[in-house]
Image (cartoon, rainbow over the protein chains, first blue to last red):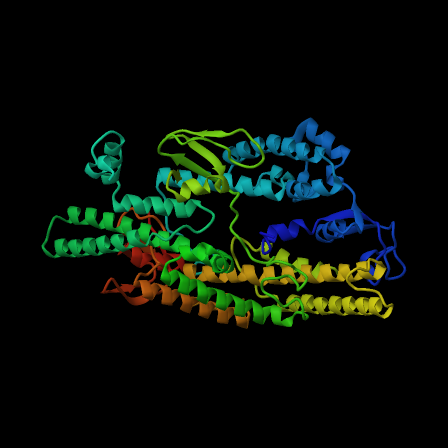
Length: 186
Length: 222
Length: 197
């Protein structure tokens, strides 16, 4: 595992996916909120975080369902106008989860969907990053996944750096870790 | 006896000779710095080059001091100073980037042959860093976990290999440029289209696929 | 249960505003550590049950096995979150040495756990040993140089200091023309700002 300490990688795997238990499991308590005993029975449908679903899938203990964010409705919306779909609300790690889940559910169309969505949205993200007013966070930001937000911010900061370089601005800056500037005479 | 190369006379060798004299140590350092900045993993330490650069810096410092004392035109002095500053920045930045990589991948470096790419001082630093971080993680987390789960390298005793060690991501993309035509290259095992690396062309490729070219100095990272 | 608290811990890392450290959340760390022990107990009792039934723990694939497996997975997940929490904070702590120097401001120091403060000191020593072996200060020159001198305004009372062997009085609001290297640390610490011509 190359990303053992990677924060995003850990958070991606927190996304819930729905699985069906192929084997029963004893003594796991509140894993299945609907169950009356501490046993999860074979055939129970349970929502698990990806990290658990993935490992159990490897050992044939569960089968994984395609998460809702890759359902037909989302696909149709993406085909209609990819840039306007609120992916953040559906899954903040839409692309990353897609990449991780595709081999588990054996759905070959997910790859193409991700690529199409990313390509069509990326163009929009770039254009807006370079043209939108800098200070105010545009409303469309709320539609972006984490990766898209990073790209947006990267585009903006490189644009800002370019402008600073061209106009000549202060090159030395206070360390960000010290937090917001406080005027000493406040 | 290689007769032609002794005189450094004919054909291509003139080219090489010219490119050699136009390559000053500062240029070489700039290149080493660029490579170190762009490559995801730590590269071979340029010990001899760093040594030469430091001697040159020393010389420049002395020259600037002499000039300042002997009352030479302040503009000339400040030009020398700027040149000196630039070289010093390059050197510091080069060494710093390497330290950052060591800090990030210390455990990985310590147990692979990347270790041999470090200078003696860097090895000492890496050793110390690893001990300090190991101690810190031990104290803050590992010592409080159940038996079988206390390892710094393995998630549990059930893991067959060291599955907790951060490694540089060699399949990341880098921007590169070659000085001369290098022919066509099959870039990965996936059977994609081979890429032709032409002199002066900028390519965006996976680091992994051009790693040997970087190490042999045939391609520049930018 | 099942990594809920551990997730909070990791979330804390990502929600910090650009590179700012939050106070070390020792309550949460304790809770997650405790969850690890609980999983371990459950795991052991399920394995004991398998053994008591006279089955081979290596090959048995019954409901007890899968229960034990889930507890094992939850345990290594919790461990990963704990480790990532401390490891990534350690990363920020090492950066502090570069950004604010070898003495931590009180407001930052208060956010570190004791082992973290210790770690900062140890890492500082490691770095100092390296730099003195090399006889080169690497904590200056972070920005590619343009001019050897820059104009700065002092925005906090620094007082009298030696800059390039000259005694200088850095009173609040005073304006100076300083060597770039001399000014760099003060700007990074937020005690001076660069003035543009």
